[in-house]
Each structure stands twice: as C-alpha cells, then as structure tokens.
Amino acid sequence: MVVTTRNNGSSNGLTKFWHRNGRYIVPPIAGFLVFLTIWQMLYSIGAIKLPGPIDILSDRNSQILILYPFYDRGGLDKGLFWQTFESFQRVMIGYTCAAIVGIGMGIWVGTTPMINRALDPLFQFLRTVPPLAWVPISLAALQQNEPAALFVIFITAVWPILINTTVGVQQIPQDYQNVARVLQLSRKKYFFKILFPSALPYIFTGLRIAIGLAWLAIIAAEIVMSGIVGIGFFIWDAYTNGNVNEVIISLVYIGAVGLMLDKFMAWLQTKLLPNN
Image (tube, rainbow, N blue to C red; front, side, top):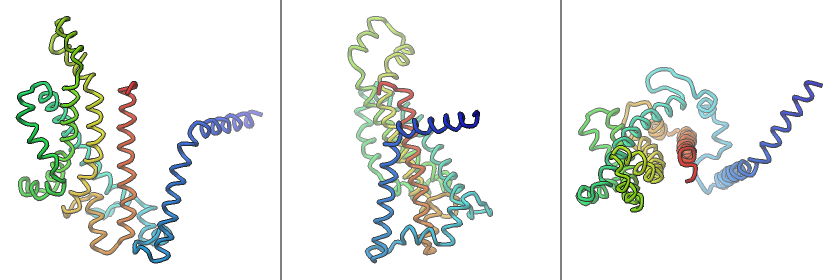
C-alpha cells in the first residue's frame, strides 16, 4: 500500500506538472520536429546540399561528437562540451567587463548632459562597427589571440549596455527628482533609492541584448583566430576539412547556449524586477 501511494503521488505530480506546462512544452517540440522533417525532405529531393538529420545521426564521426562531448585528448582535440565551455568562459569575462564599464559610463553620461552631447555621436559611430571588423584591429594592437578575443567581446557588448543605461537615467521622472530635492537626499541615497532603481529596467534591457551579441562576437572572433580552443575555431576547422556534419552539430551547441543565456537573463530580470 505504501508503494502504491507513492506511485500515485508521483503520477499525480506528473499530471499536475503536465497540465500546468504542457502547452509550453508541446508547441516548441512540434515546431522543431516539423523543421527537421522539412529539412530531411528537402535534402532527399536534392533541393539543398546540406546533409539531412538522418544522415548526420548515422555518420560515425557525428555519433562520436554527440555521444562523447567530454573527451579530451589534449591540445585542440577536445569534445564539443569543452570547446563550448572555453568560448563560454571568454564570453563571461568580456561580458562582465562590458557590464561594469557600460553601466558605470552610462550613469555618468546620463547624468551629465554636456558629456552626453560630446560622446553620444562617438558611441553611435562605434556601435555600428561589426564584431569581425574589430578582430584585425584587436590582433594588431594586442598581438595575442586570447586578449584579442576578449576585447572583441567587450567592444561588441558594451554599447547596448551603455546606451540603454544612459537612456534609463535620462528617463527618470521629474517628480522623483523634485522629491529628492525637497527631502534633500544625499547623493548616495539619491543613487540607491531613485536613480538606480528607476534605470534598472533599461539596464536589464541592455544586458539582455548584450549577452546575445557577446555570444555572437566570440564565435566570429574564434573563427578567424587560429590555434585556440573554442567552438568558433572548431567550426572553421571542421569546415576547412570538409566536415559539414560537425559544423551543423556545433551550430546546435551554439544555439542551445545562446537560448539558455537569453532565458537566464529573462528569468533574472523577472526576479529582480517582478513588476516588469
């Protein structure tokens, strides 16, 4: 009877979970399966040259990449988990630096109209430069692949954070500022009680945009930077060796990590800004 009760409890829990979340789970899975089916059909009739999902999964090298993502034979010969992890580490370092600089400068520029007028054209100019264009400049300036890759991430991610923070500071309601003057709040209290909380939704918008751009930037940087462990260089090396299957599997890893990063930032935003 105890076992039966436990099984019934587990079954009821699964049923409740499915009733609450089934409508969020089924459509993405169905959409993904439809996409794979159309892809396989187009390959079967010769409409596209890329191998279909069935052909990729039946390939021996692809099976090794999928089933053994944690292998490490030293040097650049590592599984996709380690390739992706190395890229992820670089993104986190560059993104963190971009967040610190972007939020700090955004608050300074947003609270100083003269500085804003002086620097805004420069910011708007630099933010339009594609990540790949920064690669040769960073390599020429830093002379090493690793710091150059970190710089490319930083310079790509910093602009949405900086610009959104600036806008958020400038959008603080005048009533809030009037209340601060009436209450004669110190600069410290004004920052923590009014300025930062009011600008936080804009800051999170910039942070969420920047995390996606940072992940895109590291892939672009690693593709043209030879000799470093990373998913971007792995893709380029696989392509130059004609291993299209490996390229496609790597894209799955890239998309999965990018999706998780975006969802994490969205979750964090809901926790810190419940009314947003």
